[in-house]
Length: 329
Image (cartoon, rainbow, N blue to C red):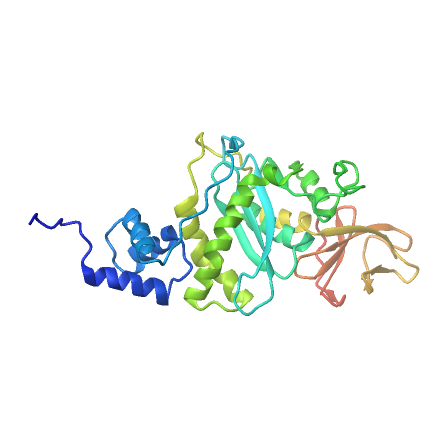
């Protein structure tokens, strides 16, 4: 008989692999399962063996044949030249209703800068993802999104997005000189679509494996554990060295990435906003602001502020009660 190969997987380890897959990792892809074998179970044999072994035991079906090849759009050469932001509604957590996962990703590298679960995608979730990304990396040259109503005004279904009537998101991006690019087909969002395929396959299993059961715990896990590992595994180097991100102050972002609406001050020196009465406090600038045109800002935490030009007239909590005013833009 020939000499047994030193690379042969011992029988006891084969049984361990089969038992682990059946009892703990059922439903994982071969690649995802192999990563955990190496990381968590001191497994030294290759991915190809793992896939073939799972198939030989009837634990893993062959993947369906792919459809016709599509040429992928070339990546931007520098990080920060274009970001993608998109949401995916899915049953991310066992036993809970479907939630939206909001992801902000760099086009040049596929690095995910922000990812979190929320009950519903909208203006607030867009601002949250942008704030987390801009605050950490700076301002990008452009942002690529679908044509959801919080991103673009579209006069007719299927028509081009308006470039003159801006949403809150559009206003904020225009104020910082960031180009807002609208997607007009699923194929145009191919990079985001492929990312969500990966996340839908992996994330629910990772949540289940680590016992994550609430949205708050899931968002901590995403930020502290999953995203660093995901980027180490899937992000690629940009074609060119350097970065197109432009540094910015976090304080400036807070005043831009928020809902802002024009109002006229009433005869009682109050501003009505979302069923709240915001009382303007006494000011050394003038006796009152009756009939003045002002801007009301609503921040992601639910607090408010009133601005007259660059002057902050007052700040308020979620219920409209005054807090300490800050007379600065």
